[in-house]
Image (cartoon, rainbow, N blue to C red; front, top):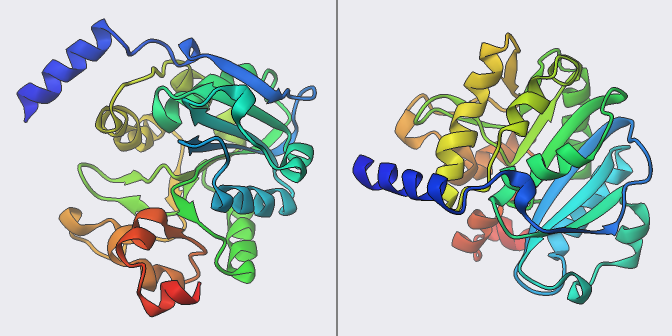
Length: 268
């Protein structure tokens, strides 16, 4: 396994894993000046010429919560063929159509580098379309309030314990110290368009928490692990119903696919 991963890593470094900014990018709605307040870079993947409905609904909920959302669409579809809801086009703070390269981290790093001055940002949300929700408006409102009142520098919703303890990257929030001390810019500025999802997980998701903690920043999961077993610590997949009962306002798309006939999921 290690030999295969090592060989794939060398092949990627020598070939397609260029800087995140190497991907082609078109602004369907350019950024209007410097953003301020709470800012979200929301990545969605489009394998058809339209935006996934659940991604649009999630973005609308974030905007309604007072968060300025820049949507990034990773896609192989031509930019001029991609249909974008007129309401979303009006309310989003920016919409980038980006070549499908580097997965979520490549997209976040690329657009973050294009956002200019971040000195007036209070929080930076990095969110992707692997979750569906909000399932409950009250729980969503409470989650946003907890994030805004948290004293942690980096907030995730959940964490995994393997291969090392780390915040899961589908929803991350960076506070003022992480932004103002340059840690976010520095770490994301080094990111590359790795060609496989496992490389992105190994190089970024699994390591990111330790990298920020090494900078002296405190990291917190809003919903702590429900199991102490590292080999079964992915609560979003294994304990999704219990998470929702605890106020977690989302369910993973892979859970919907695997349990589509579950009564609770059918009710949602």
